[in-house]
Image 1 (tube, helix red, strand yellow):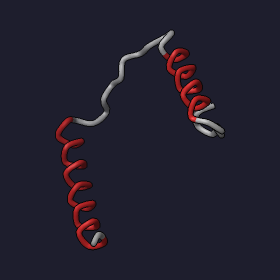
Image 2 (cartoon, helix red, strand yellow):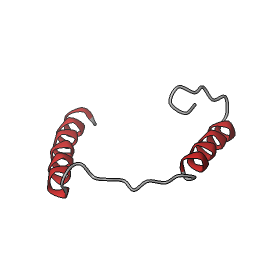
Image 3 (cartoon, one colour):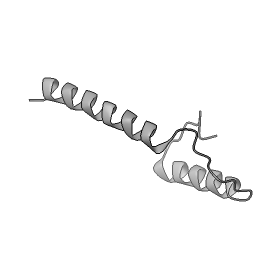
Length: 60
């Protein structure tokens, strides 16, 4: 319901999130990283550089 849900109020959205979390916590599975920390950090650094250059050029 969260993926394509339409919520008319914040409390309705919060209730849907709580329901989703409760459902998925009944059978938890560990998160398995598919990338190394080095790969993730390199991507974050690239993204920050890109965003910084865009913000400096567009913000006044």
